[in-house]
Image (tube, rainbow, N blue to C red; front, side, top):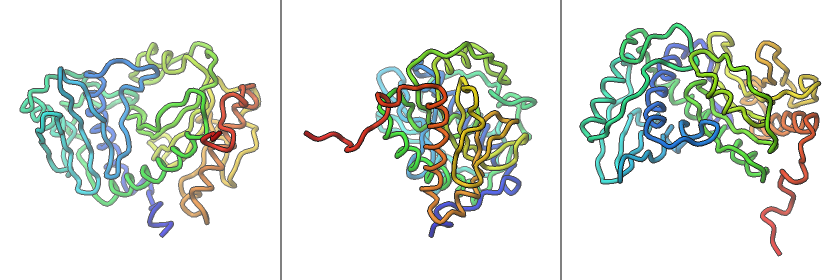
Length: 309
């Protein structure tokens, strides 16, 4: 049952589907971005894990709201409005341009007016959404496996998040980088970030990293690092962070990424995957917080929790 809950997700087996789905989620995420008020660190743009896939959560549209959901069980994309309307189409092999046209047409039918920047973020060499006929793959089996990995990871991340009473992000999915993340904050301002992320304005990056963080996430891999991994990094990284003692066995510091990584396959093969992942989250956070001299006594939950008088 453990291996079914944490399924295999070899990068090479679903690379084409992954790349297509990355662009589909960017389109949906940019719709949320265009219609939502700004929230610090770009938290207004993210998607969230549901019991069936990913959702925008409610997006304001005048005096009503709407939400867009990826359902990776029935393999549908749905748009629901607060006045009771529903539109849907199947998730199947379809170009990014075709997905973009179909979704925008559906929104117009629902009288939802929205314009988005059609250039993909955080990737190089990919055409605008309405011109992208190259990425057109969708394999149900691997899309479903990806969802199940997100679902399991979300559970553990939520438990990890609950042990911190300082500022902490939601557990959310960033469509630009295509990863599920949770971030803890020390409460102190950080040095100005250098920026330089492809196709992302430096001012966005600098606002996102305006304060000290310890951040962890799951990333299914990409062309430059074709392996699904859990990761953890600090900004700014305190001196000696890469030499911190972390667990479980198999966790290492990847110099080329500047962060600790734990291969997904190590977690799924563990006797207790939840415990293995939690160990990684806790030990990498402690490395960042201790070396960075965070005020851990005031930021972390102390048992019993919740406090009872």
